[in-house]
Length: 170
Image 1: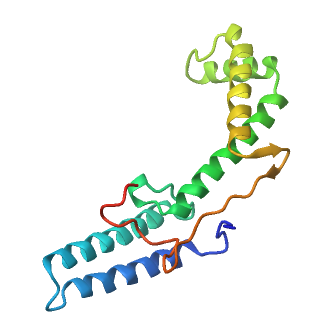
Image 2: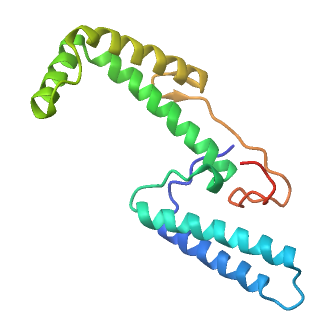
Image 3: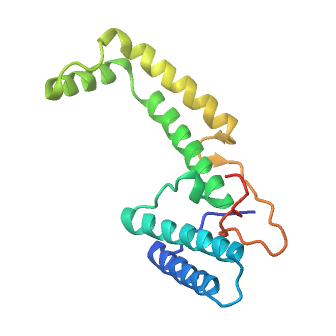
């Protein structure tokens, strides 16, 4: 069963990705490497470098990697984050009432102009609640803070953080 690696220092991980990219680039420059081997090694090195750059740019926050830079674990973690956010939205939508939404919209209006007609507050809250509840349930939220676990199949010799092969769909 997969668990998020929250104990991993993102800057250390980015440094390891740069080291891996350097190793791949050195392999690509070895005498006797075919053009195809060079291209594949350069592509993988670039993948690691782009991930490291995104970590640096977003630090101290964890980046949301673009699809082409996600690992299988990144994909699972992102959907897990989505379902947890949907569950939080359910709790927030249940906790506020129409008057609070209208008061907030009025405060925003005073700051920058009209944003929400008072008549839409009830509809807005009901839609947010319905969509978030369905999404959270569909993605394995059972209720309260209970989430179904998720797992990923690991193929012998494969690493969860490996980039997809050049011809593998992302």
